[in-house]
Image (cartoon, rainbow, N blue to C red; front, top):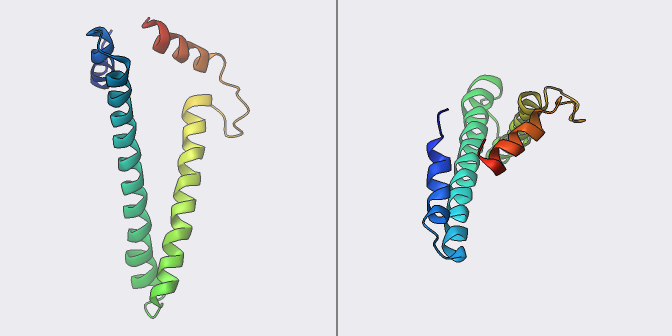
Length: 115
């Protein structure tokens, strides 16, 4: 069974029996990197849509404030689309009512037990 490299990096301080604060710093660093990547991607998508699609194709005379508003609306739209796709991938449903047929529990067991 292949082991993900991210899991190895996050588990190394615990395997080395380092202090709990070191483990917390490594985990916080991983979380910060993931959130930074996600926010950067959201910013790129929204500004691309606002400038390349809206400003160049739909309304070339749009003011700066209108383009900023379109960009902010796109951030909300892309975040909602991402949430929807996550639900489909994890739960197998678009309603988010947890009809995962035990997949979430199996994933949680594998993460906590390593099996």
